[in-house]
Length: 112
Length: 122
Image 1 (cartoon, rainbow over the protein chains, first blue to last red):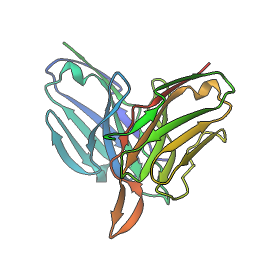
Image 2 (cartoon, helix red, strand yellow):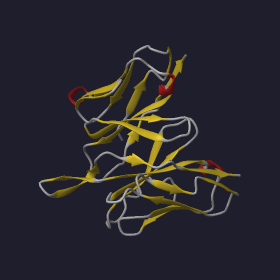
Image 3 (cartoon, chains in turn red, brown):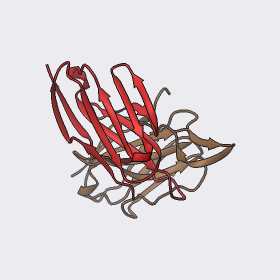
Image 4 (tube, rainbow over the protein chains, first blue to last red):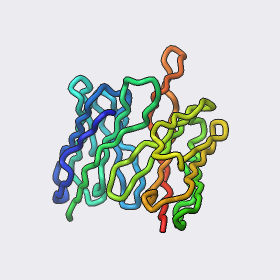
C-alpha cells in the first residue's frame, strides 16, 4: 500500500513562531487532506488539497503532486494550535476505495 | 444533523462480549468509512460503503469484525468476541462521492469525521 511519512514527529515552539510540517507519500493520490486532532480526539478538517496551494487564515498548504509531498504552514502560532497534525492520502491506483492512509502525525506544542 | 455523529461515545466491555457501534453520516453523503485509532497512533482504514453497493471489507482486521449500512444512512460496526487488542477509538467518516462526466468513481471527495467511540475491552 501507499506509504505516508510526516516530519517532524514532534515540534515545540513559542507562541508567535511560524512552522512548516511536511508530508511525503509514495504513490499518486486522488485525495490529500490535513487534519488537526484536538485534545478531545476530534479530527478537524484543515485542507483538502490533492494539488496546488490553499490558504485559510494563519494556515496554508501546498501539495506538489508530481514530487509527492505536501507542506502545511502555520504562522503566528497560538497555544490553541497545539495538538497532532495528520496528513492523509487516498492513492489513485486500484480498483476500489482504500480509504485514507494516515501518517503518524506531527505532535505540535505551542508554549505561551 | 450538521455533522457525523457516533454512538456510544464510550463503551467498556468484557473480553469475549460482542459490541455494536453506530454511525450517522452527514445527510446526502453516500460514501461512509470506518477507521480505528489505537492509542498514540494514526488512523487505520477498516471498511468503506458507497451507497447501496457491497462494502469494501479489505481493511477489516479479522472475521470478528463486520459492518452493515442501511441504504445511504446509518451504519453499524459489530465486533464479536472482543479481545483486549480491539481497544481503540473507532471513527466514522462520510463524504460525497467524486463524479467525472457523470460516472461515479470509487475514490472520495473530502472526508468528514465523527467524534469517535472509545472502546475499552477489559
